[in-house]
Length: 406
Image (cartoon, rainbow, N blue to C red; front, side, top):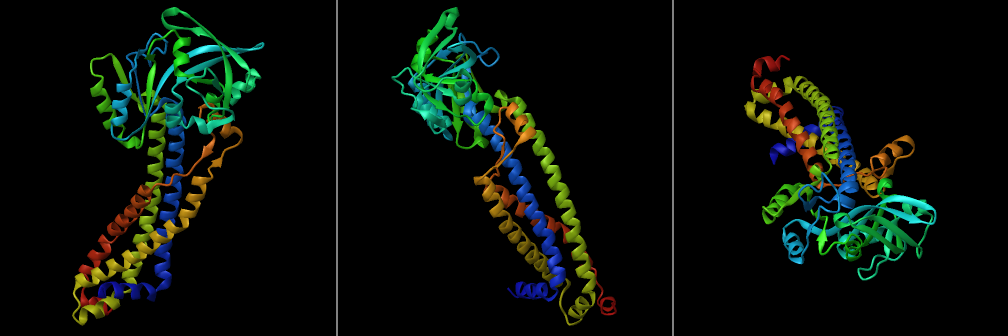
């Protein structure tokens, strides 16, 4: 406690020097938190657009389905299968699907669409489909009404209550056709999905495709994607040698995974450069502090204070300055991160068009995760400790007579 008291008084004694070091640490923490929050938020947005709305963190389907997405590549479905997957730790939702391509026609308008046969309740738990409803009513598993994306409904110039003709190919080359009433209109954040998705209750999709109790896929949503591999291995063990393939979103969307990995690498390099600049700033301030106080240290040595105690005093002074800088940087960044976390910045113009072409909502949300707040603070403290090595060595080698003459 005596060391801390003396270190605090020494910090306040030269406010200008302490303020310079605090400003370096403050700027490092502030910029790193803002930058890292933007990066992680953009990755979450990419993943949520692809994983949360469509592919799932993990997907179960017949071997070869992902390479050849035809209605013949289906597998048998039973409740025990879903119950087992739902019992796996970290699984938050399991949604059975029948997916196929078809032509949708209304009046003299025809569009190519993707038909999604879903369990209404399971799909809502998976993708919050009910929250995307902007007009009409949600799906009823006992009613043949369908949901259409808002852009698709606009292109076909139809609304709730109209009936749409669906033409396609069923199981083993059988013809598939049906007339279905539009029960509701949904709005997807991804423009690409909004202009081609159609949902219907799974039992009517199976009838449409001439399937029995069969599915094209089971999509699985996880509570924490970091535990993806462990969950995947547990599910693979259940389907071993049954002709079933289990893939995670990195396999389902490899381009997205590579894009995130490359961008994350660039972000880490930028943070490293920022911290390198800050490290030299802190190091320069420490050297200046030691040189200005050589005579003071000489007097302390002359009256019997040990070298290691002086080094400990300097160490605590620097930690106090670093701690104050970290706290201020975190406090100033929190309101900005919290605001853009709840109110994501929305891109316009060419940037928005590019993001929409990739099937992503054109927004920049900030991530709000305690983990990276802690990691950035720890990184700064490690830098401070490393920068103290040379000043501490110089104090250990300080000669009393030489210091008194300084």
